[in-house]
Amino acid sequence: GEQVEQLPSILRVQEGSSASINCTYENSASNYFPWYKQEPGENPKLIIDIRSNMERKQTQGLIVLLDKKAKRFSLHITDTQPGDSAMYFCAANGPNYNVLYFGSGTKLTVEP
Amino acid sequence: NSKVIQTPRYLVKGQGQKAKMRCIPEKGHPVVFWYQQNKNNEFKFLINFQNQEVLQQIDMTEKRFSAECPSNSPCSLEIQSSEAGDSALYLCASSLLGGDEQYFGPGTRLTVL
Image (cartoon, rainbow over the protein chains, first blue to last red):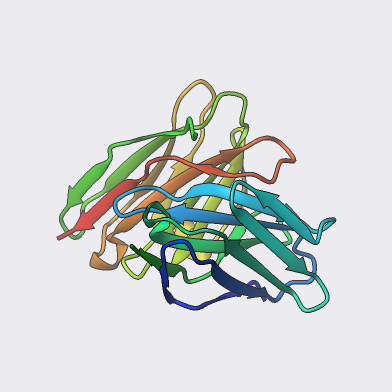
C-alpha cells in the first residue's frame, strides 16, 4: 500500500518549545520523504526533506529523522515561533514516477 | 520559492459544467504532477506527465478528466462534467527529470455549486 499515517492531527505548543510530528509509511521501496508547510489560503511549501540514504537532516531549526527499519520518519521544530503556526504535511514517494503520498496533516499552533 | 504558475486562482462552476485549469511548470522541469486537496486537507494524486506523455493516472482522472501537457503551451486539467465533490484545491507541481523535489504552484481553488 501507499498509505502514510501522520500524528498528531492537532498540536499546540508554547513559543520557544519544540514540536514533533510523526509519520509512518507502508511501502518499503519509498526512498524520499518531504515535509510541507501550508498556511491558510496558501499552497504547500517544501521546507525540508530526507532521502533513504540518511537517518538525520537538519536545517534552520528543523530536524528530520528517518528510521527505515520501522518505516517511520519525524519532523522536529526547535525553538518554535508564532510564525511556525500552520498545517504541516509529511509525504513519501510511491514506487512509480515519484508520486507523493501525503499524511493527513498536523495543525500546529504556537502560542505566545 | 516555487516558480510554478497556475491559472485561474479561483474557479466557480455549476454542476455538469466543464472546469479547466492551467499550469506552467518551472522552467527546465519536464515532469508535471496534478494533485487534488479536498476540504479535509486530504491529498489525492491525479495524473503526471513527462513532457507530453502521461506517466500515471488514477481511474477517476481517466474517466472524468481530460489532461494534457502540449509542447510550448501550458499544461491543462479539465473536468468534463463537474460534480459537487470536485470542489477542492487543485495543485500542480513540477520536478526535474529523475528528481525528487516537487514544488507546488499556488493552486486553483474550484467551487462547484
